[in-house]
Structures are given as structure tokens and as C-alpha cells.
Length: 353
Image 1 (cartoon, rainbow, N blue to C red):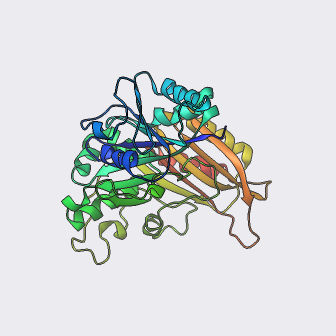
Image 2 (image 1 turned 90 degrees about the vertical axis):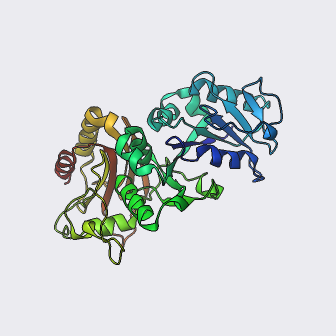
Image 3 (image 1 turned 120 degrees about the vertical axis):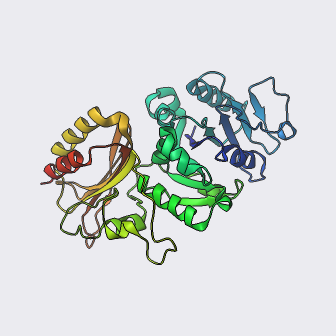
């Protein structure tokens, strides 16, 4: 049986997860999707869109989707769904898991790598995070869960953008990009987002592409040409003080504990040194490392080496050959909570040949 792709949908309370899920569960998109709800939330999925009575915790929807409430833990629910699919009792092609508004998506993601039974049936595709434009700045200030949800994301949707001014939306977008330059950011109006932006994002695939928001890089590279690495935190660059042509001319500064930074190097890495260093770093800082990913130039191979990780779980793979005319630059992005940037940079520098 082919692996079932799974998407984790996260976002703080009231960010619009249920609205987006209702759309998935009722729209005629022709896909058979199983939705696992961690709670039915403050807003119940309407009974008029359910086919059967709700005695059973797995409910068939009128458009062929399946909705399931977690009664036990997530692992048991995933195993149950996979078993029913294998026996032909349930027909679905993919799974979307809605976490509670206060959840840290990390342990949910780790379930797909640490549990052998789950790993044999499912493939984690991506973490999609909804952010409520109206309340996000406050939530990000006050709640680490909200910051972690942003840090883990492969795709960010900003909901309720119509309730804030263009300047407020711009400031929020800027802040989110600093926390997570990997995730594309889009506005979502009442859950109206194309399913192609939610499904098959391949956020956990080991592919040779490392997407980092290009604005984030150009903005953070001023005056750092003499370094091997780019800076990804707030520093006192003139570009951080204002955006060209912006009405206010100022972005508010937030010293978020969830930060990202990008490391780049033109010299190749020594495989043994890098493996030892990353192993040690993950051992010490793993719980604070949300997502990290890199495309690396390694001594001794003509292929790109791709690595990525979530918390303490790290994997790497050989990618395609470097093209003859391609500059062999290693590029890594680290997203985490108060990561010791200087230690990381210094240690990575020492792993270069």
C-alpha cells in the first residue's frame, strides 16, 4: 500500500482552522480526505453535513471525506484509520490532522518518524499554520505556543487580514518572515485557500531545494559580504529600521524567542567533523530546535547532501549532482527557540575544510 500523505494543521485559538477544515470537508474537490480532529473546537462541524449519526467517532461526510475525533492518542487513531483502509472499510487518500489551538506541533510531527507502525503507513507532508491577523501580534508576544507554531510551519496563512490596516498586515508579515523565512506566507479569506497550497507541499521531503524567503536574504545581507554566513536576526542594519517607500517608515521590533538564521559557506564541509558537530548540537539543543534544513557541499562527493530535522530527529540524503557551472555553496537555515547563534556559526565554521 502506498504511504498515505499527512498534513498537520495548526494555529492559535480562533485563527480559522475550523473554517478551513469545513471547506475541506464539504467542498466538491473530488479528493477523499480523512480529517482527524483533536477536539471539535469552539465551533462544531455542522450535523447537516454529516452522513451518519455521531455515535461512532469516525464519520463519513457527504462529499466522501471522513471525519474522525481523537478519543485515544493520535498514534492509535492513525493506526485505526490505516487498518480500516487496508481492510477496505474506509476509503481515503490522505489525512489532515487539526491540532488544538494551544498545541505544539513538534510532538505531532515526531509521531510520524518515531513510531514504526505509523511510519510504515504514513508520510508526513507538511505543517500548515494559520495566524489571525487581528490578534497575532499579542498572541506572539504572550504565548510561546503561537511562536512555535510559526517556527514549525511549511506554509503560513494569515486569516482575518481584512480586520487590520495594510501597515499592520505588513508589520505582521515582516515579523513572521523573521521567525520563519522558509514558509511562504499568504492571506486566507474565510478559509478560501486553494487546496494545492495546503496539500502535497513536500515540506518534509529531502529534496534539493532550500526555499528561504528571498526578501529576507537580500534584506539581511547588507554589509556582510566578507562573512561566510548571512545574518537572520534583528540587527541594526539600516534596512531593519525602515522599508523603502513605506508609509510609517518603521517596523516595530519584537525580540521573539523563536528566531531563524541562515548560514552559508563557500568552502566544503568535512563530513566527519560536521556529523560530530551536528550530533553534539542536536543532543544539547534538540528540544529548542524546531526546524532546520540545509543543502550542503561536502568534501569527497560530487553530489549535494540534503539534511533536515525536527527537534532531535535529523536525517540526510544524497541529492543530485552539482552542475558544472553551479557555485557550490552550502546553505542552511535554523529555526528555534533562543538558539546560541554564535556557537552554531563558530562550530560550523570549524567543520569547513
